[in-house]
Image 1: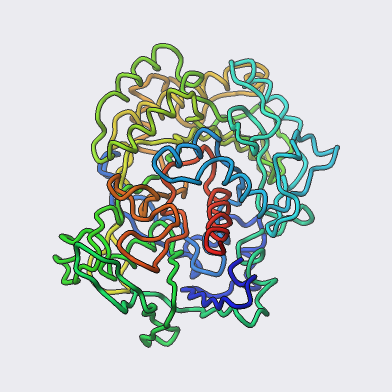
Image 2 (image 1 turned 180 degrees about the vertical axis):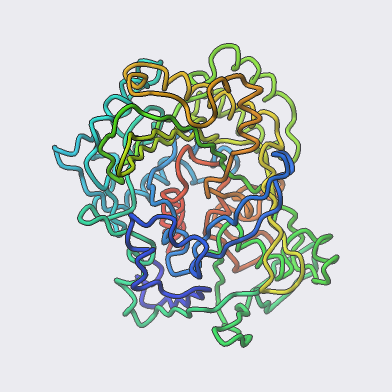
Length: 529
């Protein structure tokens, strides 16, 4: 988008390769095959202190052109208008549902399903002329009709389309892919390869940025630091530098904060302890790490059902639907306890979500059919708005050393309670006709694991990440823990910006990908104007 102006020269410094010819990227049936390979950063994380000290496998992050859009689960869905409007309420003028939905539609090239695909949708909720192809990717099996009916019978609602700002309900969800043969759409296939011939656009591959270089460093308490470029290590292991009038970090939630910290931007106490001279004292850098949690619940069915790889069904509900009166009262009391590690502005934002009946629990529904034998139904309850917060911080000044990443899942007791109540809700739905007509027995958790207490223990042993990490370079006023201002400029600097999921202040009730595209489209308009 920036190089649409021929007078703007852009250099992209990419740690990975171009990914061309890699079927683990293009072939959507191979989702997950790229994880743990050379196009995955494989960031290690610390053990889960509040979940039996479990050690999770490294969370996949794309180390290739297109970043995580090249290796993620491919789901493309937007959040609720209530959530996006909270960005502006936090103190970010111009960042709201209206601006983000306009940016999202600008980037999207939606392909409508055919009348035979058995999928409801609202064309006006999608963009059709953008650079990123999206589609449902196939024909919905008849069993999906029974799942939808079961959710409705259990007190849920059916949604025609979750893309228009009202996410609550059960619906099929779009994916970032072309409809024919389902090749994956990435930010590289949509926004780079078709324009790589532009003379004002250059990409350095296999080059890892280590820090920002400064032209001018003011006193720590006043003035603005001016960047002159960046330092990076090239494919041969040689340290190089690149000059620039503007530096934009898009290293992701785990990649951008370490670059800032190694450059002297962050908590000055931490930086001094590592021998790094502080340039901007900005304690919010690397804090507020937020990740949605999920847990697998699985049932054996009594028949073998057709099982296309897509489309997927998602059921999204507010807490009052998911929890029921008794559990809701407990959650209300927990929400009134000041959360550890969560700044008051973000806590207030979560309370406003609850008051406005925002979506809070997602059910990610997956049907598997082995070559021989009956199918299995897997239903993943997801806590969309956890209050627990983690962090990502450097361990040394070494530009190639991985940072220390702490999730802090279930640090706040309300998160575990909501997950357990969400699991109870899934059990209730699955026990409702016509879904119950297919059920033979639960596989996991075992039969009899139905109480909040027992489900909580199951969740602490089995819960995992969703790869929807946000918040470590927060878009918020500086006094509220913010790292970037409404123009995405890093506080205390004149020409350093962050454009990636690390600035997102609140989890959308969705998989993160579509929100990041909308964020980037809106950022491009801000920069061009």
